[in-house]
Image (cartoon, rainbow, N blue to C red; front, top):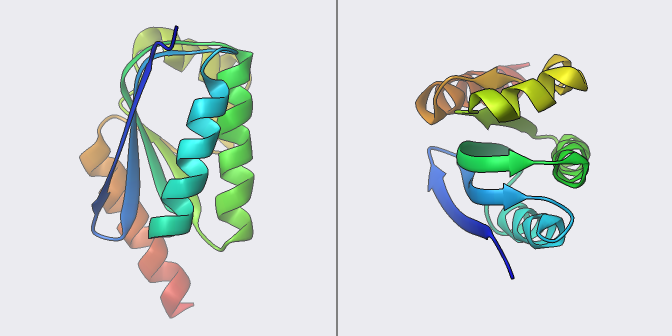
Length: 123
């Protein structure tokens, strides 16, 4: 039984993957494949919208870490947006927030991603 809903949209040049439900060992591979396809199709400026994510275990963290490595290798970036309290605790517990920017909303993540992309293009 899959408990994970995934959707992708592009805003500006950012690829936003919305994750809904429970991200665990049973659903992590689905997210991994979805992220890979989204980055291949739309580019390496990736935002994970976690506003509807109810639960995440270490399998989910591994997918996020792999996504971070992938987009960095491609010259892009990863941001997390709209985490609930439970997911925020997991992200902070492992220190992921020190590597991957965490934003209150998808809109602020998109704005930050635009600024980062513009800075990389200029520099």
